Length: 400
Image (tube, rainbow, N blue to C red; front, side, top):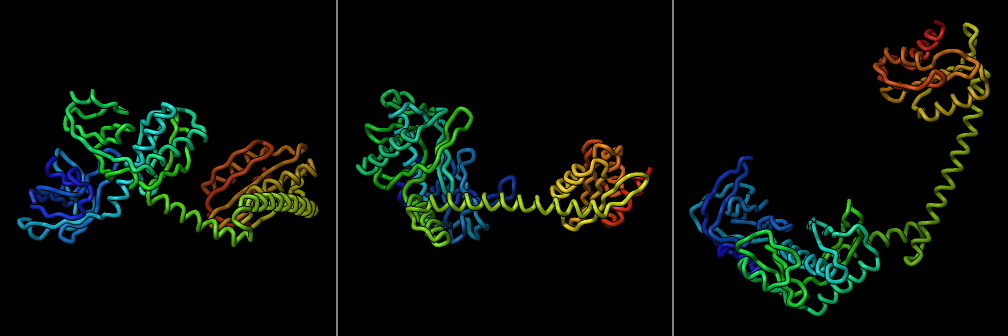
């Protein structure tokens, strides 16, 4: 562990080292191994550090077979010289805040309610923990959040200690350690004892704050979303910006925003309903007009028309109105929507043409698919012929 400088001091931002190995992995990615490093490799739920080595971007850091590989954007020119590395401190400190905050919040849930943390993910924007409970009350989240922020406010020390497996009996661990040697404990004395290989600040005060954002049931567990430290400020800024924009758009003060949005939604639903009613009325007028222009063929009363960019739902409704108005009517509608044709075929109760069979025969000429019943069928396919040609095809098919 001596070459992992981030364990000696997580606040080290830059360092010098010698190159031990330079190579390519199985995917052809360039990497180097150094005799010591400040770059933290992905592990224990914490993402890797980024930064530069000799001004070359470090894109990824992984521990593979006991060696820390630094994946570089390009190869080093001189692998025999001493190299200088600098980590992205903002990213490192963010991870330190988030990881320590997770320890605090997990310990709070377990101490207050006995809910163990069985999963953890540190994402780019939010963190999640999976609690071993199927239900979580809002009152419980508030109590856990309050206790966590009290621990932060009181600025308790955060200690790290390397112990042997035999020494673990001296500590009230929140969960069993997965490793059997090189065991590293992260300790908040008299509050939380946990095996962890991540980087953490020296005191809880540096976590700054914890805010729970949401939670949801995941199978037999509950996933809690939260943020810590500077991410709390970032979340507040983002949400405040959205809220300010909404106050301008809705012309309502911030405290009345909820009611303004509810009114807007209600007005939208009312308008949508009125539009549906207006469309229904227009479709009835259109149906009467089409019935007035119906044609008779082979003792069949046929209502047929061609449309452009008409929704198939409207055609279906129009056909339903027509066959309800006249039980002897047969409706044959075709709509061309860009490079596709949509067909709707329907018959009244007194007509005897099989619509499913009719539309099935018509669709073969346009590589189409459809379905329905003997009384009502619909489908669509490629516009290999014009809508007018398809209409004529349907009229010819209905005569046989």
